[in-house]
Length: 275
Image (cartoon, rainbow, N blue to C red; front, top):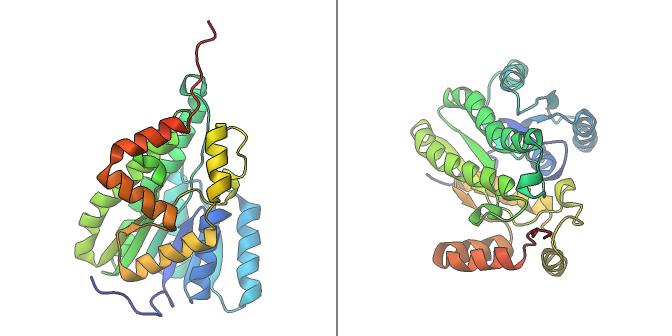
């Protein structure tokens, strides 16, 4: 596929999930700045309103709207996407960023919490793709971008449910790419390192070694990750690696995966029996 033009996003109708904060909010702002018609979706109504108003304050001509969609609910996703179609008259693209993270020993995770991680991160991404794809296919051109993570390279203690969902998103995106290409639809998957978002604000539950590593290397900015995602969509690239940390870890994962396992174990803290 050839690289799309500089003004590719102008006039495109795009849904962004998880747009009430973090990467999703930045993706929405940058899309609007490039002239896209943007549907900001999330369950955080106040966050959606904040970012919609911020976008509008920069350019009153921006066509942005907010839609309260619970991506863990099939009915909410189907109804919400239909509302977007009615509002914009069609759909050209989807950017999935919504996710949650827990850091609790698996044996102690409440069943409801474990199911919530799977439902939002993996099932929610699937539902959004399934609901949006037929509408994008009608255009015979468009894009879908999903958000995985370098975390999927090796499941870590206390958070491997999150890692599992990110591995599933990567594999889902691979298959979706092959199905969507004949319709002129590009599929991208973004693998960020740790991003400075509300989800990673509290480091108190992480092992000391992990905290020291994050403090030394820092966190990536949501704006940078969003920029890489949009450039990747424009270039029709599948694998998007924002920042030197993500690129470095990807190379290790490809050529020496055992090192990833060693790094994961060395930075983990496993709860041991008390007797």
